[in-house]
Image 1 (cartoon, rainbow, N blue to C red):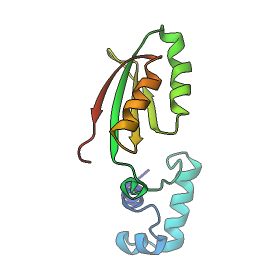
Image 2 (image 1 turned 45 degrees about the horizontal axis):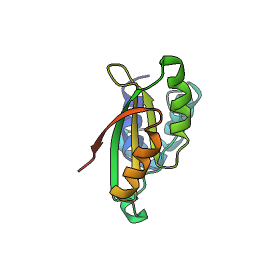
Image 3 (image 1 turned 30 degrees about the vertical axis):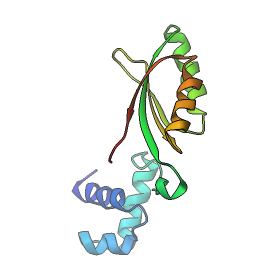
Length: 136
């Protein structure tokens, strides 16, 4: 991976739908050359996929929160709990972490009442701490 590939990745990170022609003009390569480099990075696993950015407020999401969990059960149960929590519709990500906490959950909720309901649901897995996201 060279400096041109890094610039291509930077541009795709800003806008994953950017045309190869536009990227090429910016860095001085042809659209086919950009396409070849992108395909190579996909084949090598550097680019794993492309993401969609959604305006959640327009979908009625008022509350976003990070929730950390200290599990009731031992480490063996953590991966099972992680799978079950990850499957819940409110959960955007559920990561196993080091430190005092076992899991860190990013959740999107219609409102605070919805968040409270979610916290009650996951209380069976462990003790939670919640940080509501005020601004991104």
